[in-house]
Amino acid sequence: MTSAQKAKANRANAQASTGPKSARGKARASRNARRHGLSLAVGADPVLSEKVEELARAIAGETTDVEIYQLACRIAEAQAQLQQVRYRRHRLLFQTMSIPEYDSEANERKKMKMVMGCLRSTGPFTPMPDDVFEFVNSWPEGPEKFATILLDKVHQFSVLDRYERRALSRRKFAIRALDEAKWQDRH
Amino acid sequence: MKKNAKHTSASTSGAPRRLELFGPPPILEGETAEAYWELLDRVFGALEPVDFIDEIWARDIVDVGWNVHRLRRILSAYVTAEVRAMASHDTSLLVEADPELERGTDEQRQEMARLLNPNSKFSWEARKARHPSATERYMKLWEAARSTLDLNEIQATVMVHKLDTIERLEGLIMIAERRFDSVIREFDRHRIMRNLRYGLHNAEKAKIKTVGQKNAN
Image (cartoon, rainbow over all chains, first blue to last red; front, side):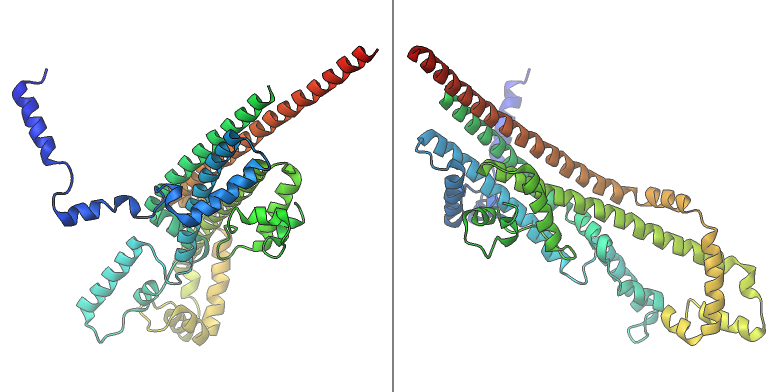
Protein backbone atom coordinates (compact mmCIF):
# COMPACT_ATOMS: atom_id res chain seq x y z
CA MET A 1 0.00 0.00 0.00
CA THR A 2 1.40 3.39 -0.98
CA SER A 3 1.54 5.86 1.85
CA ALA A 4 -0.26 9.22 1.58
CA GLN A 5 3.07 11.04 1.65
CA LYS A 6 4.43 8.85 -1.18
CA ALA A 7 1.28 9.34 -3.26
CA LYS A 8 1.57 13.10 -2.80
CA ALA A 9 5.20 13.02 -3.87
CA ASN A 10 4.27 10.90 -6.93
CA ARG A 11 1.59 13.39 -7.91
CA ALA A 12 4.01 16.29 -7.51
CA ASN A 13 6.62 14.47 -9.63
CA ALA A 14 4.04 13.68 -12.29
CA GLN A 15 3.08 17.35 -12.47
CA ALA A 16 6.72 18.17 -13.13
CA SER A 17 6.97 15.85 -16.14
CA THR A 18 4.07 16.74 -18.36
CA GLY A 19 5.95 17.77 -21.46
CA PRO A 20 7.70 20.93 -22.58
CA LYS A 21 7.12 24.19 -20.69
CA SER A 22 8.62 26.83 -22.98
CA ALA A 23 6.77 28.15 -26.02
CA ARG A 24 9.57 26.85 -28.28
CA GLY A 25 9.37 23.40 -26.70
CA LYS A 26 5.61 23.31 -27.03
CA ALA A 27 5.81 24.39 -30.67
CA ARG A 28 8.34 21.66 -31.38
CA ALA A 29 6.32 18.98 -29.57
CA SER A 30 3.21 20.01 -31.49
CA ARG A 31 4.97 18.96 -34.71
CA ASN A 32 5.89 15.50 -33.41
CA ALA A 33 3.30 13.71 -35.50
CA ARG A 34 4.16 15.64 -38.65
CA ARG A 35 7.58 14.15 -39.39
CA HIS A 36 6.26 12.07 -42.25
CA GLY A 37 2.54 12.82 -42.14
CA LEU A 38 1.62 9.14 -42.17
CA SER A 39 -0.35 9.36 -38.94
CA LEU A 40 -2.50 12.24 -40.21
CA ALA A 41 -6.12 11.57 -41.14
CA VAL A 42 -6.70 11.12 -44.87
CA GLY A 43 -9.23 13.97 -44.86
CA ALA A 44 -6.47 16.42 -43.91
CA ASP A 45 -4.86 16.05 -47.34
CA PRO A 46 -7.01 17.31 -50.26
CA VAL A 47 -5.08 15.33 -52.90
CA LEU A 48 -5.40 12.16 -50.88
CA SER A 49 -9.11 12.81 -50.24
CA GLU A 50 -9.68 13.04 -53.97
CA LYS A 51 -7.90 9.75 -54.49
CA VAL A 52 -9.93 8.13 -51.69
CA GLU A 53 -13.12 9.24 -53.40
CA GLU A 54 -11.98 7.83 -56.72
CA LEU A 55 -11.01 4.52 -55.08
CA ALA A 56 -14.28 4.37 -53.13
CA ARG A 57 -16.28 4.85 -56.35
CA ALA A 58 -14.33 2.03 -58.00
CA ILE A 59 -14.90 -0.27 -55.00
CA ALA A 60 -18.59 0.49 -54.52
CA GLY A 61 -19.40 0.24 -58.22
CA GLU A 62 -22.89 1.34 -59.20
CA THR A 63 -24.48 0.85 -55.81
CA THR A 64 -26.83 3.40 -54.29
CA ASP A 65 -26.66 1.79 -50.86
CA VAL A 66 -25.23 4.34 -48.40
CA GLU A 67 -23.85 1.69 -46.04
CA ILE A 68 -21.97 -0.07 -48.87
CA TYR A 69 -20.53 3.27 -50.04
CA GLN A 70 -19.41 4.15 -46.50
CA LEU A 71 -17.67 0.80 -46.18
CA ALA A 72 -16.08 1.32 -49.59
CA CYS A 73 -14.76 4.66 -48.27
CA ARG A 74 -13.21 2.86 -45.30
CA ILE A 75 -11.44 0.43 -47.63
CA ALA A 76 -10.35 3.28 -49.89
CA GLU A 77 -8.89 5.25 -46.98
CA ALA A 78 -6.87 2.25 -45.80
CA GLN A 79 -5.76 1.54 -49.38
CA ALA A 80 -4.67 5.15 -49.91
CA GLN A 81 -2.69 5.13 -46.68
CA LEU A 82 -1.11 1.81 -47.62
CA GLN A 83 -0.05 3.20 -50.98
CA GLN A 84 1.40 6.26 -49.28
CA VAL A 85 3.49 4.15 -46.89
CA ARG A 86 4.71 1.92 -49.71
CA TYR A 87 5.57 4.93 -51.82
CA ARG A 88 7.60 6.44 -48.94
CA ARG A 89 9.52 3.21 -48.48
CA HIS A 90 10.18 2.90 -52.20
CA ARG A 91 11.36 6.53 -52.38
CA LEU A 92 13.69 6.04 -49.40
CA LEU A 93 15.23 2.96 -51.03
CA PHE A 94 15.39 4.54 -54.47
CA GLN A 95 17.00 7.78 -53.28
CA THR A 96 19.58 6.01 -51.13
CA MET A 97 20.37 3.53 -53.90
CA SER A 98 21.04 6.39 -56.30
CA ILE A 99 23.78 7.90 -54.09
CA PRO A 100 26.92 6.59 -55.87
CA GLU A 101 29.23 7.00 -52.88
CA TYR A 102 26.91 5.60 -50.24
CA ASP A 103 28.51 3.71 -47.38
CA SER A 104 27.37 2.56 -43.96
CA GLU A 105 27.86 4.96 -41.06
CA ALA A 106 30.25 2.50 -39.39
CA ASN A 107 32.41 2.31 -42.51
CA GLU A 108 32.40 6.10 -42.91
CA ARG A 109 33.68 6.42 -39.35
CA LYS A 110 36.35 3.78 -40.03
CA LYS A 111 37.47 5.67 -43.16
CA MET A 112 37.64 8.96 -41.30
CA LYS A 113 39.69 7.31 -38.55
CA MET A 114 42.15 5.90 -41.11
CA VAL A 115 42.56 9.24 -42.87
CA MET A 116 43.10 11.03 -39.57
CA GLY A 117 45.64 8.37 -38.55
CA CYS A 118 47.56 8.92 -41.83
CA LEU A 119 47.47 12.69 -41.38
CA ARG A 120 48.77 12.41 -37.83
CA SER A 121 51.60 10.00 -38.66
CA THR A 122 52.85 11.29 -42.02
CA GLY A 123 51.44 14.81 -42.28
CA PRO A 124 49.13 16.38 -44.87
CA PHE A 125 51.61 16.48 -47.78
CA THR A 126 52.52 12.77 -47.94
CA PRO A 127 50.31 10.58 -50.10
CA MET A 128 48.33 7.91 -48.29
CA PRO A 129 49.48 4.27 -48.61
CA ASP A 130 47.80 2.37 -51.46
CA ASP A 131 45.62 0.12 -49.28
CA VAL A 132 44.31 3.08 -47.24
CA PHE A 133 43.63 5.05 -50.43
CA GLU A 134 41.81 2.06 -51.95
CA PHE A 135 39.73 1.52 -48.82
CA VAL A 136 38.79 5.20 -48.51
CA ASN A 137 37.76 5.28 -52.17
CA SER A 138 35.77 2.05 -52.11
CA TRP A 139 31.99 1.93 -51.73
CA PRO A 140 29.61 -1.01 -51.55
CA GLU A 141 27.99 -1.89 -54.86
CA GLY A 142 25.15 -4.10 -56.06
CA PRO A 143 23.78 -6.52 -53.46
CA GLU A 144 26.24 -5.37 -50.81
CA LYS A 145 25.00 -1.79 -51.21
CA PHE A 146 21.39 -2.91 -50.98
CA ALA A 147 22.09 -5.00 -47.87
CA THR A 148 24.02 -2.07 -46.32
CA ILE A 149 21.08 0.29 -46.94
CA LEU A 150 18.56 -2.17 -45.51
CA LEU A 151 20.63 -2.63 -42.38
CA ASP A 152 21.58 1.02 -42.02
CA LYS A 153 18.02 2.32 -42.37
CA VAL A 154 16.50 -0.47 -40.33
CA HIS A 155 14.86 2.00 -37.92
CA GLN A 156 13.15 3.99 -40.69
CA PHE A 157 12.03 0.79 -42.41
CA SER A 158 10.60 -0.62 -39.19
CA VAL A 159 8.60 2.61 -38.62
CA LEU A 160 7.19 2.38 -42.16
CA ASP A 161 6.52 -1.32 -41.63
CA ARG A 162 4.44 -0.51 -38.56
CA TYR A 163 2.30 1.95 -40.56
CA GLU A 164 1.95 -0.59 -43.37
CA ARG A 165 0.82 -3.27 -40.91
CA ARG A 166 -1.80 -0.93 -39.49
CA ALA A 167 -3.11 0.07 -42.92
CA LEU A 168 -3.23 -3.58 -44.02
CA SER A 169 -5.17 -4.53 -40.92
CA ARG A 170 -7.63 -1.65 -41.37
CA ARG A 171 -8.17 -2.59 -45.02
CA LYS A 172 -8.63 -6.28 -44.18
CA PHE A 173 -11.34 -5.59 -41.60
CA ALA A 174 -13.03 -3.02 -43.83
CA ILE A 175 -13.20 -5.55 -46.70
CA ARG A 176 -14.59 -8.17 -44.33
CA ALA A 177 -17.23 -5.68 -43.17
CA LEU A 178 -18.15 -4.93 -46.78
CA ASP A 179 -18.47 -8.65 -47.57
CA GLU A 180 -20.59 -9.06 -44.45
CA ALA A 181 -22.85 -6.14 -45.43
CA LYS A 182 -23.32 -7.54 -48.94
CA TRP A 183 -24.12 -10.96 -47.42
CA GLN A 184 -26.73 -9.39 -45.11
CA ASP A 185 -28.11 -7.53 -48.10
CA ARG A 186 -28.84 -10.86 -49.82
CA HIS A 187 -30.92 -12.13 -46.90
CA MET B 1 -6.99 -7.26 -67.96
CA LYS B 2 -4.01 -9.19 -69.26
CA LYS B 3 -3.43 -6.90 -72.21
CA ASN B 4 -4.42 -3.73 -70.41
CA ALA B 5 -1.83 -4.21 -67.67
CA LYS B 6 0.95 -3.33 -70.11
CA HIS B 7 -0.58 -0.07 -71.22
CA THR B 8 -1.40 1.59 -67.96
CA SER B 9 -0.30 5.07 -68.87
CA ALA B 10 -1.13 5.14 -72.57
CA SER B 11 -4.60 3.67 -72.73
CA THR B 12 -7.75 5.49 -71.74
CA SER B 13 -10.03 2.48 -71.26
CA GLY B 14 -11.51 1.67 -67.83
CA ALA B 15 -9.25 -1.15 -66.67
CA PRO B 16 -5.86 0.55 -67.09
CA ARG B 17 -7.05 3.64 -65.27
CA ARG B 18 -7.98 1.36 -62.41
CA LEU B 19 -4.44 -0.03 -62.36
CA GLU B 20 -3.08 3.51 -62.14
CA LEU B 21 -5.15 3.98 -59.02
CA PHE B 22 -2.69 1.67 -57.24
CA GLY B 23 0.31 3.94 -57.84
CA PRO B 24 3.58 3.43 -59.75
CA PRO B 25 5.31 0.02 -59.82
CA PRO B 26 7.96 -0.44 -57.08
CA ILE B 27 10.93 -0.82 -59.41
CA LEU B 28 14.44 -0.03 -58.19
CA GLU B 29 17.75 0.59 -59.96
CA GLY B 30 18.92 -2.61 -61.63
CA GLU B 31 15.41 -4.07 -61.93
CA THR B 32 13.53 -4.22 -65.20
CA ALA B 33 10.06 -2.80 -65.62
CA GLU B 34 9.30 -5.48 -68.25
CA ALA B 35 9.80 -8.25 -65.66
CA TYR B 36 7.44 -6.48 -63.26
CA TRP B 37 4.73 -6.03 -65.92
CA GLU B 38 5.14 -9.65 -66.97
CA LEU B 39 4.64 -10.81 -63.39
CA LEU B 40 1.59 -8.54 -63.08
CA ASP B 41 0.27 -9.88 -66.35
CA ARG B 42 0.65 -13.48 -65.24
CA VAL B 43 -0.87 -12.95 -61.80
CA PHE B 44 -3.85 -11.07 -63.23
CA GLY B 45 -4.19 -13.75 -65.91
CA ALA B 46 -4.17 -16.55 -63.34
CA LEU B 47 -6.43 -14.88 -60.76
CA GLU B 48 -8.84 -13.27 -63.23
CA PRO B 49 -10.08 -10.54 -60.85
CA VAL B 50 -13.83 -10.09 -60.97
CA ASP B 51 -14.30 -6.94 -58.87
CA PHE B 52 -12.13 -4.05 -57.70
CA ILE B 53 -11.39 -5.73 -54.33
CA ASP B 54 -10.00 -8.68 -56.30
CA GLU B 55 -7.82 -6.24 -58.23
CA ILE B 56 -6.53 -4.75 -54.98
CA TRP B 57 -5.51 -8.19 -53.72
CA ALA B 58 -4.02 -9.18 -57.08
CA ARG B 59 -1.87 -6.03 -57.18
CA ASP B 60 -0.82 -6.73 -53.57
CA ILE B 61 0.20 -10.26 -54.51
CA VAL B 62 2.37 -8.85 -57.30
CA ASP B 63 3.99 -6.11 -55.19
CA VAL B 64 4.61 -8.22 -52.10
CA GLY B 65 5.80 -11.13 -54.27
CA TRP B 66 8.14 -8.76 -56.12
CA ASN B 67 9.59 -7.66 -52.77
CA VAL B 68 10.07 -11.28 -51.61
CA HIS B 69 11.93 -12.11 -54.85
CA ARG B 70 14.04 -8.98 -54.51
CA LEU B 71 15.08 -9.78 -50.94
CA ARG B 72 15.86 -13.40 -51.78
CA ARG B 73 17.93 -12.26 -54.75
CA ILE B 74 19.83 -9.77 -52.58
CA LEU B 75 20.55 -12.36 -49.88
CA SER B 76 21.82 -14.87 -52.41
CA ALA B 77 23.97 -12.29 -54.22
CA TYR B 78 25.33 -10.99 -50.92
CA VAL B 79 26.41 -14.46 -49.72
CA THR B 80 27.93 -15.26 -53.14
CA ALA B 81 29.94 -12.01 -53.13
CA GLU B 82 31.19 -12.65 -49.60
CA VAL B 83 32.17 -16.26 -50.42
CA ARG B 84 34.00 -15.05 -53.52
CA ALA B 85 35.89 -12.39 -51.55
CA MET B 86 36.86 -14.83 -48.82
CA ALA B 87 37.93 -17.49 -51.35
CA SER B 88 40.08 -14.91 -53.10
CA HIS B 89 41.65 -13.86 -49.78
CA ASP B 90 42.35 -17.46 -48.73
CA THR B 91 43.85 -18.25 -52.14
CA SER B 92 46.19 -15.27 -51.89
CA LEU B 93 47.35 -16.46 -48.45
CA LEU B 94 48.02 -19.96 -49.82
CA VAL B 95 49.97 -18.62 -52.78
CA GLU B 96 52.07 -16.33 -50.62
CA ALA B 97 53.00 -19.32 -48.42
CA ASP B 98 53.86 -21.48 -51.46
CA PRO B 99 57.66 -22.23 -51.72
CA GLU B 100 57.23 -22.22 -55.52
CA LEU B 101 57.01 -18.45 -55.29
CA GLU B 102 60.66 -18.27 -54.17
CA ARG B 103 61.95 -20.39 -57.04
CA GLY B 104 63.61 -19.07 -60.24
CA THR B 105 66.48 -16.74 -60.99
CA ASP B 106 67.35 -13.70 -58.88
CA GLU B 107 65.72 -11.45 -61.44
CA GLN B 108 62.49 -13.50 -61.39
CA ARG B 109 62.42 -13.42 -57.59
CA GLN B 110 62.93 -9.66 -57.56
CA GLU B 111 60.15 -9.18 -60.10
CA MET B 112 57.83 -11.33 -57.98
CA ALA B 113 58.76 -9.32 -54.87
CA ARG B 114 57.96 -6.08 -56.71
CA LEU B 115 54.62 -7.53 -57.86
CA LEU B 116 53.64 -8.57 -54.34
CA ASN B 117 55.06 -5.52 -52.52
CA PRO B 118 52.28 -4.32 -50.18
CA ASN B 119 53.97 -0.92 -49.70
CA SER B 120 54.27 -0.16 -53.39
CA LYS B 121 52.98 3.20 -54.56
CA PHE B 122 51.35 1.43 -57.55
CA SER B 123 48.00 -0.31 -57.39
CA TRP B 124 47.68 -4.07 -57.90
CA GLU B 125 46.40 -3.59 -61.46
CA ALA B 126 49.33 -1.31 -62.33
CA ARG B 127 51.84 -3.77 -60.85
CA LYS B 128 50.29 -6.60 -62.86
CA ALA B 129 50.73 -4.60 -66.07
CA ARG B 130 54.37 -3.74 -65.20
CA HIS B 131 55.42 -7.34 -64.40
CA PRO B 132 53.68 -9.65 -66.88
CA SER B 133 55.89 -12.73 -66.50
CA ALA B 134 55.69 -12.61 -62.67
CA THR B 135 51.93 -12.11 -62.99
CA GLU B 136 51.65 -15.17 -65.23
CA ARG B 137 53.60 -17.33 -62.75
CA TYR B 138 51.57 -15.93 -59.85
CA MET B 139 48.25 -16.62 -61.61
CA LYS B 140 49.26 -20.25 -62.27
CA LEU B 141 50.03 -20.71 -58.57
CA TRP B 142 46.81 -18.88 -57.76
CA GLU B 143 44.71 -21.24 -59.90
CA ALA B 144 46.41 -24.28 -58.32
CA ALA B 145 45.81 -22.96 -54.81
CA ARG B 146 42.19 -22.06 -55.66
CA SER B 147 41.45 -25.65 -56.71
CA THR B 148 42.53 -26.94 -53.30
CA LEU B 149 40.03 -24.79 -51.41
CA ASP B 150 36.90 -26.32 -49.89
CA LEU B 151 34.04 -24.00 -50.82
CA ASN B 152 31.70 -25.56 -48.25
CA GLU B 153 34.15 -24.63 -45.55
CA ILE B 154 34.36 -21.07 -46.88
CA GLN B 155 30.57 -20.81 -47.05
CA ALA B 156 30.35 -21.95 -43.43
CA THR B 157 32.94 -19.35 -42.40
CA VAL B 158 31.03 -16.62 -44.25
CA MET B 159 27.82 -17.73 -42.52
CA VAL B 160 29.50 -17.44 -39.12
CA HIS B 161 31.19 -14.09 -39.86
CA LYS B 162 28.19 -12.46 -41.55
CA LEU B 163 25.49 -14.13 -39.47
CA ASP B 164 24.14 -10.81 -38.23
CA THR B 165 23.56 -9.41 -41.74
CA ILE B 166 22.25 -12.72 -43.09
CA GLU B 167 19.88 -13.09 -40.15
CA ARG B 168 18.51 -9.56 -40.61
CA LEU B 169 17.93 -10.17 -44.32
CA GLU B 170 16.27 -13.50 -43.47
CA GLY B 171 14.05 -11.63 -41.02
CA LEU B 172 12.98 -9.18 -43.73
CA ILE B 173 12.25 -12.10 -46.09
CA MET B 174 10.19 -13.80 -43.40
CA ILE B 175 8.10 -10.65 -42.80
CA ALA B 176 7.49 -10.25 -46.54
CA GLU B 177 6.54 -13.93 -46.92
CA ARG B 178 4.13 -13.71 -44.00
CA ARG B 179 2.52 -10.68 -45.63
CA PHE B 180 2.29 -12.58 -48.92
CA ASP B 181 0.54 -15.52 -47.23
CA SER B 182 -1.86 -13.18 -45.49
CA VAL B 183 -2.80 -11.48 -48.80
CA ILE B 184 -3.48 -14.88 -50.42
CA ARG B 185 -5.60 -15.93 -47.43
CA GLU B 186 -7.69 -12.76 -47.56
CA PHE B 187 -8.07 -13.02 -51.33
CA ASP B 188 -9.39 -16.59 -50.92
CA ARG B 189 -11.75 -15.52 -48.13
CA HIS B 190 -13.18 -12.70 -50.23
CA ARG B 191 -13.74 -15.06 -53.19
CA ILE B 192 -15.42 -17.71 -51.04
CA MET B 193 -17.77 -15.07 -49.58
CA ARG B 194 -18.66 -13.77 -53.04
CA ASN B 195 -19.18 -17.28 -54.47
CA LEU B 196 -21.39 -18.22 -51.52
CA ARG B 197 -23.40 -15.07 -52.06
CA TYR B 198 -23.88 -15.74 -55.76
CA GLY B 199 -24.48 -19.46 -55.11
CA LEU B 200 -27.24 -18.61 -52.67
CA HIS B 201 -28.65 -16.04 -55.06
CA ASN B 202 -28.75 -18.57 -57.93
CA ALA B 203 -30.25 -21.27 -55.71
CA GLU B 204 -32.99 -18.84 -54.60
CA LYS B 205 -33.71 -17.93 -58.21
CA ALA B 206 -33.96 -21.63 -59.18
CA LYS B 207 -36.30 -22.28 -56.24
CA ILE B 208 -38.60 -19.42 -57.23
CA LYS B 209 -38.63 -20.74 -60.80
CA THR B 210 -39.58 -24.29 -59.63
CA VAL B 211 -42.32 -23.01 -57.32
CA GLY B 212 -43.65 -20.80 -60.16
CA GLN B 213 -43.75 -23.76 -62.55
CA LYS B 214 -45.55 -25.95 -59.94
CA ASN B 215 -48.17 -23.22 -59.39
CA ALA B 216 -48.74 -22.93 -63.14
CA ASN B 217 -49.31 -26.69 -63.38
